[in-house]
Amino acid sequence: MTPNKLVYKNLTRRRGRFIFTLLGIVIGMASFVAFMAMGGSLKAEIERESAALGANLVVTPKGSCAYEQVSILTGEQLPTTITAAEVATIRAIEGMQAIPYLAERSAINNRPVSVMGVLPIETKEFKGWQIAKGVYFPTDDAEGAVLGAVLAEQFELEPGDQVRVRGTMLPVLGVLEETSGKDDLTIFLSLPQAQQLYQQNDLVSYVAVRVDKLDEVDLYAMKIKAQVSLGVVSDKQMLNSVLGIVGTVNVTLQLIAAVAILAAAFGIVNTMLTATYERKREIGILQAMGAARSTIFRLFLLESAIYGLLGGFGGAVLGLAGSFFVAPYISQNAATSFVKGSQTSVDPMLLLGAVFFSTLIAMLSGLYPAWKAAKLSPVEAISYE
Amino acid sequence: MSDAIIKTTGLSKEYGRGDTRVRALRGVDLEVPRGSFTCIVGPSGHGKSTLMHLIGGLDRPSGGSVSIDGQEMFTLKGKQLAELRAKKIGFVFQFFNLLQSLTAAENIEAALMLAGVPEVQQKQRARELLATVGLSDKVDAKPGQLSGGQQQRVAIARALANDPPVLLMDEPTGNLDSSAEAEVMTVLDELKRQGKTIILVTHSSEIAARASYLVKVRDGRIEEVVTSRQVLKKIA
Ligand SMILES: Nc1ncnc2c1ncn2[C@@H]1O[C@H](COP(=O)(O)OP(=O)(O)OP(=O)(O)O)[C@@H](O)[C@H]1O
Ligand SMILES: [Mg+2]
Image (cartoon, rainbow over the protein chains, first blue to last red):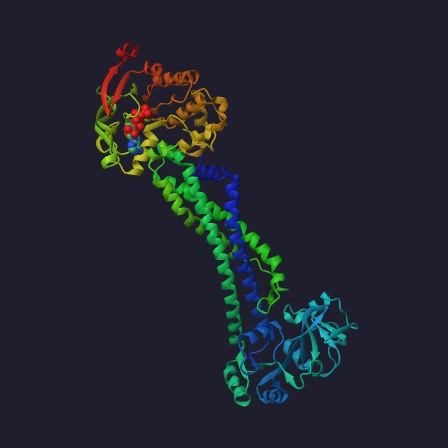
């Protein structure tokens, strides 16, 4: 017999209660881990998109806020108020490259997809795209669509097929190589064609800017602002404000999970207190056998710690599995739409942290019952029937 | 009685305060010789169990002292007192002595664990002890699968686990029928032969008849101590 074995025997003597208490902590930890994992992959995805944008500065309509910045990274529809004249002014500034985009939406088989109007030749070079199938736009105002790799595969579209964009059938010219970003899920049109289809004559949504000398980013931001009355954000500012929004969403979700864990913790308190009352006489016997109060305390604390250990492990596994399977279903709004197509990464630190955290919670929950058990006087415990 | 293993002086115990105050023991001076079989008898509620609890260090007295093997008990701190219980004293109570989730052998192993015996030596010792109380075939039985007499014999085996010099038994057969009591008495005879010091509370005249000393308790005091030669006469 060892203290661990004794604890194990005591834990499993009331199977039903053991399992239900454990389920409580498993579910609480699972939701916590799932939200953490999703939040983590969301963050990674946003950072990837920001890098994929390939810009140091983004010119947005005047007065745009964080929501528009999220939309730039997610490919949501954006208000288009930047005029051709403004684009031309920006593009005339020396020492930097400026690429305008028109971000719109369409639907294929009732599923929403992003549509982007681009300057074919410059954008391809700017983004470093490669063609996987078919051809790219032969000219800057060519008819037809170039598709992202995942979108083409999803809707089984090949070069030569037709794709309907805003009610107009367009030939599929080619399919891009995978970029593992949102470009994979986008229909690209030449800017003139997109403007015509969406009746946005001469207007674009935003302009991505890459400066030649990185340490002069601020200088160029000021130069742009001096010439046009538009918003200018650096990629870092944009990243920070988007991550800020995502962070708020994450914190909210984690608070919900924290409430679930708190409820589970009270479940442990309840179970352990019940065990203390049930085993009152046995505690007296143990004391008569020579167990010190500290020994009783440790046995009970260890018993509740096991709930945390098993619950943390079970919760982490279930939570990671959950975030993997559930994530696609919650990717319907802008803030979480990144999750689609992204792989939930299994972070061993998250697993370890979950087990550690829930063990800590369980031990805290066990403190009071263990103290109650340890402070029982042997005579009182033995006289109890 | 020069070689007293247990000695109490002016031992008293009060429960409660004010109107609810109960004076369970009112100054008990008792010397228990090493290797003796002492029975404590007396009417219900007169302080027999209270005396046993104090002798065993399960409770602290309101006044007076207890020493075991010359060691003053109540100057010890809780942890040391617990250690003393593990090494010097074996307890058997009237009922529900066993840890219900453990088998007969495991109950004994738990006692060995608490006295610091390493796990590898526990199994062998538990089997030996169960053999001495005639329960070699019940090693893996849970308390619920044992009769009352068998449970008490396991409890005795467990009390013997750390080879303590003193065994304290509070009505060990109080809950048993006469045949089960006979089983326990056989074990007690063997322990007597081995020279254990046994202090036993009982209402059974059969057991009292085997005592070397009979201590009669009344109203929290020792009314009379009868030595073995007189015991049989007294009982009859
Ligand atoms: N924890 C307690 N709190 C208050 N009073 C107590 C407590 N334990 C015992 N008493 C009282 O102390 C007195 C002695 O009790 P004790 O249990 O020692 O009697 P006993 O001789 O063992 O009786 P029995 O033969 O019925 O076991 C009784 O009046 C009892 O009510
Ligand atoms: Mg009693």
